[in-house]
Image (cartoon, rainbow, N blue to C red; front, side, top):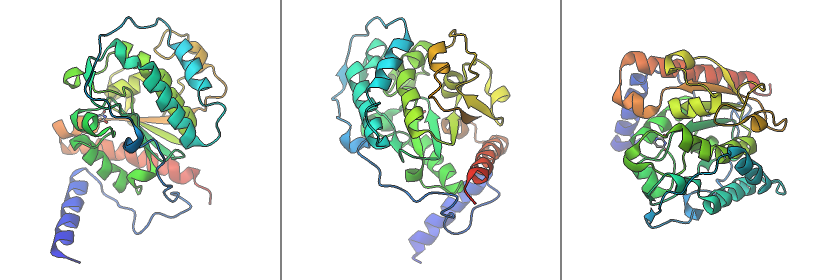
Length: 293
Ligand code: URA
């Protein structure tokens, strides 16, 4: 092993320890627990048509997200391959451009990437600067920390699916408003329906609030299991809408909210790192329990 590799490994181990990790899976993950990576399909950045800093006049948004959801779903119903379905939703997103109602400039749409059959899905907030430049989710500083978390959980980045509530970078990295989240929800919901992961980890409040239809603070949400859709009795007053919540074809998926890696970087306390690791350990336990013997 070269000195460089040794140094990189030592740095990785130290960062992981600082994250509060007190346990690491040894060797390769058992194939029965963690599926082999599948080749990442055509929805990666290579195929996302780059847009040269599109400047758009915000338009008045449609009143109902439900109508958009029905047409987003229709765009992939005739397909069977999950990657082809995700590609169809991405194309639909590009055609609908829901961000035209709130974003004034961006470079690339950041749709999401990873295994279209992933057991584990991470949903973040919105692309930042590096993501906007590359068209890939979570590739900046927060993304590097997320990568470490994923590896500490015994997965590789290619084995999970990573996406965001918003698919374009908000001006000045502003936190998405609930209206922006509502406009983009139909595309995220279709990503969830297609990948149909065993567990969703929501990173930060915007993703957690959107998928759980709540406005509760993170301290009341993280570390506990919730489900998406959040209670089939939804009254339609949330961002997602009653007809989507009541859709019998939308699988019910356990959700574990946790702190956003960018928040963790800003508040890098041992307490916060331990909280995140304890949330992720619950996810690992659940995935292990769900694995075929
Ligand atoms: N923060 C997010 O929420 N998503 C990204 O893709 C990058 C940073």
